[in-house]
Amino acid sequence: MAEADSTEAKNFHSDVPMRSESFFLKGSNNLDWGMKNRLSQIFDSRSGRTVMLAFDHGYFMGPTSGLERVDLNIVPLTAYADTLMLTRGILRTSIPPTYRGGIVLRASGGPSILKELSAEEIAISIDDAVRLNAAAMAVQVFIGGEHETRSIHNMTRLVDLGNRHGIATLGVTAVGREMVRDAKYMRLASRICAELGASYVKTYYVDEDFETVTSSCPVPIVIAGGKKLPEREALELAHNAVQQGAAGVDMGRNIFQASHPAAMIQAVRGVVHENLKPKDAYDLFQTLQHEGERKAAAR
Figure 1 (cartoon, rainbow, N blue to C red):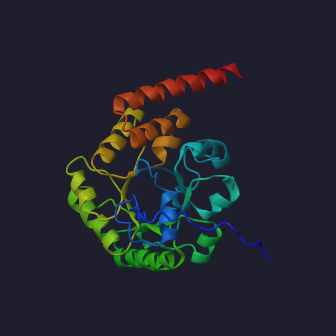
Figure 2 (spheres, rainbow, N blue to C red; figure 1 turned 60 degrees about the horizontal axis):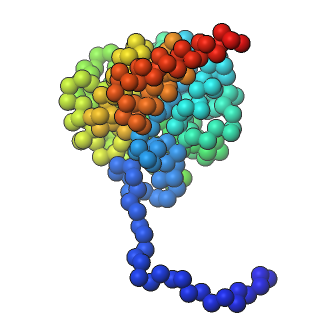
């Protein structure tokens, strides 16, 4: 048995009220401690934002450009990412277990680019998500698509499973070719995901009235990077989104297909966490790119 402590306790600070700090993340104050802890692995508590590095594209596209070798092209970038969005297969085969950021697992899948993508099913068990120490599970939600109801049920099933184990659910608003990418649609899709329990939502930035999308959604919104853009334009996209209420970005091709991916992800971090303006972020990108090229030439 431990020896009795003969020193009488006296530092109770009875005149100091018990501290009960609000959680920093929008709409998350009433979540359980474990869920908040996992969300803190995704979002930086100082800025309230995240830079998610998305490279789950292979689950329906195969080894697309920039993802031919995840071990060579992606792993060096993970040091600059707040969290990774990926599949369990790539996590197990290619990502060092020493990675300290959050893990967001792609939890839906099924059809490839050769088929109708909206026919996805849940593609992971909650036991495996727990086993892999996931901070969140990501699921496509096809609002307005042919299989809208199925995709919504996929999400709500994951919400129930995630809540049981303290794992967040990311609702990813997928936009089909026939959908209009405007604020009205994004408001609808994002709000449905939030109303039905998503911990946070991934959607697309739109040029007009995007602030109405973020303000009408009661949980954080991160924006998808989408198709590859010139680096300056991608930085402008990220800047406009966070200045209009987005809680960060989930970028893939605009990072790993950039002319210098390591420089690009650091420039994106400057926009998201330090509020760098696009010009300053692009200057940072160019400086880091030149430094990288000089180091490579000196080897």
